[in-house]
Image 1 (spheres, rainbow, N blue to C red):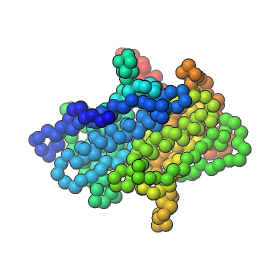
Image 2: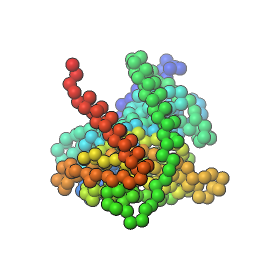
Image 3: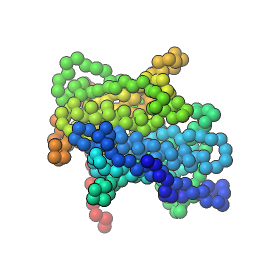
Length: 350
């Protein structure tokens, strides 16, 4: 059930008339098919709801003025932390607001609250930032201009511009990174990268796509989380849950009828967490004019839980090849950087 409460206001700079934009609040009860065997809702299910809310508000904003009609396509999801598990029977409330616009992109902040309808208790489970670009309905390869918004403070625009430049630079860097593919291995040893690596092959059908024949970003993210979860479960052989997702970069669109291969491999383990790299490759099997290409990539972090929901130690990864050792050190660097950032945020302000 979708509702549209008035949650966001954005004003066009080219008009004195304020244009009111509403977020779409997705209210949905979590069912058994949304969760794992322990009753924890899959991270991919939540990511899909987040993307749907972002797509609605950004598409609505990009069509708020007269001009060529468009649809907002997901370009990037910033790091997303899963602050608290959501369980079967709880209700998810999803809200969104536009926080910045550049000439050709929209930044959207999405919050997910979980509600226990028996006790009335609510808690914030997710807070995500997504970037969208408006694509013309007449020509989906054409990026249109975004109607600007008016900020209540000048600092908001300056801070948004810094976030825009940072994500733009990182997207360019990651577009050509991770060019290799995950290769299967025969009789791998436990706790090695090859032992837990997994792949899923999916034929893109109409139900996966927008009205214009391109895959929803949320569908891709859900599949990526499924593969990452399989990798984590194979490595730990326990109940696992998504702890966070590093920035997801969408490098190119995926069309209806393409075959996508979602591959996951363990890159790093700390005492109580696992980092899994997930790569999405698209294969236009019915189009000989285009070759297989990298469509998306991201790093997922999982934790291992006991039956009582307590954090468990993670078996340490054993990198074997030089590439695996290099990826392990890179993952360790990301882990230490994020750990230092969390500790800095936790320190009381002077």
